[in-house]
Image (cartoon, rainbow, N blue to C red; front, top):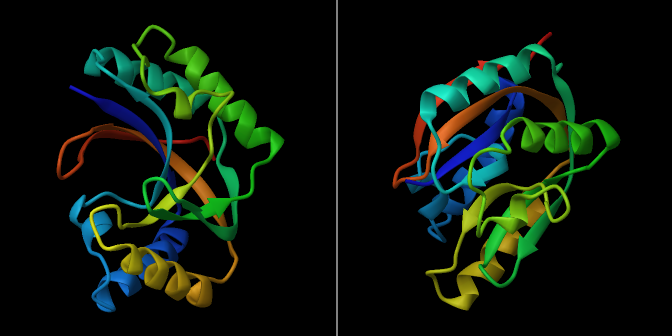
Length: 179
């Protein structure tokens, strides 16, 4: 079974990001992201398998030693190979350090094949639309829509969670970061 550790936003930021994803659906372009039934998030790490209980214990210890982080979302980005459209948070030193320390904390779990989430390759992104299964025109229309709708967002990252990568995504546990 495949798992991910995700970083979650505060409620107001989450609401703004969900609005953008919903706009793509409302325009009848793509509903795929919403069908996954996942919250707006940054994926911090992916694993081929984990001991859920042990992973949750480690996430709780990690969260106790890490404070809420500022979240500045400054632009819209795209992975053209997968036709994924996302909100792009501005990377800063504390975010990079947080990500690296999380990987050190969970280094016993198998990340083989998930290099894009490793500290040296990570592109932090919050998916808003998944259009790979659609005609190319949907990708361009959804990109255009989101480029016009997007406004910079200032918020916070407040919690981390373990999810099972299934369709739809299954949240296993969520842990609040220190205030």
